[in-house]
Length: 255
Image 1 (spheres, rainbow, N blue to C red):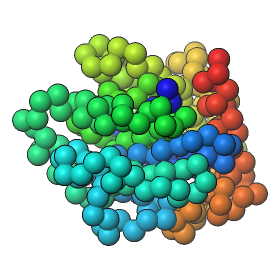
Image 2: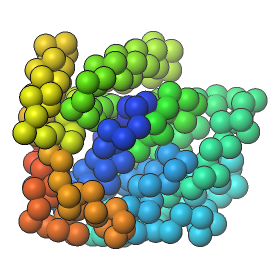
Image 3: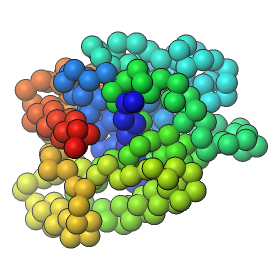
Image 4: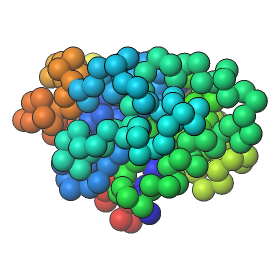
């Protein structure tokens, strides 16, 4: 059975999609079979991996609406070992359309169950809000990875996502665990970055990844070229950081 990791934080701009794209790509580069599920209506993980949003007939939206099969949706071999389940703005309407659907919280879980043995990792990029889509992702996942930007309100966002994990665990997915917290956009020149890291360590006391993702120009440029950082600039600090994070995720799974 593969591991299903939801990457979630209801605060936008914390490096969530950047982490989903680049962790997926670096796990694939390390020889793991990976599926990236773009579960965010903004579709940024889709475009960040080189696909134009709005030009695909079959996305995760059609899948949830049972208008196509999972096989028809998956885009194969984006890079070696990496497949993608794409998304676009249509997904924004899914929440309203699914209101009266039976077991609406576990639609994604049922789909991914069919193929979890085919992949070593399924990485779900969640929307930046605590809605039905995020609940679906957390119900389907084994663990949740929370990216946190090194800024003043970091702990606030963390508290809310931890409460959400507890709620889903109680009601829908008893096996759900916190995979860990990863710090993003770290700026070694500021005291604030250091303070945030120390505060979160005190607050959580565990499950914090050693790898810290720095602010990096090449990392910020890569999505506009539709490439993960390991392909866009393989020697950049951003690429090295995400390779280290991928190695840590793999070794955690082996524990």
